[in-house]
Length: 117
Image 1 (cartoon, rainbow, N blue to C red):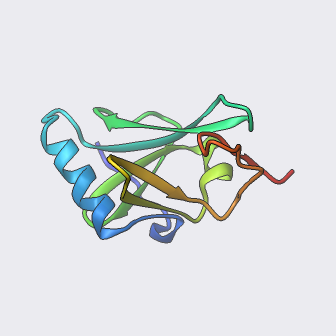
Image 2: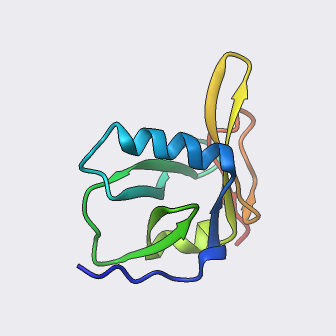
């Protein structure tokens, strides 16, 4: 299977996020990469979804950053272009943080967002 990669700057990882995701992928030996997506949820309409990938879907775009393949369904790209993924400690919680320049109208709890229409 050939993987077509697209513009690598579209979605990027901080070193902390790359280390965290690589650790996560190593624990799942069937994983070939990391999926970032959007689902309808929350008070602001959209929520990030992430998981490991075991096979490429027909509508996936594949980005590579820091030797990690990042898979995004093409319909979700309009919500994710330019996103930087970071891994931070917030109090006692360690979380992936999505620095998305397109995100507008975030809800108060920070769990969901929308883009300007």
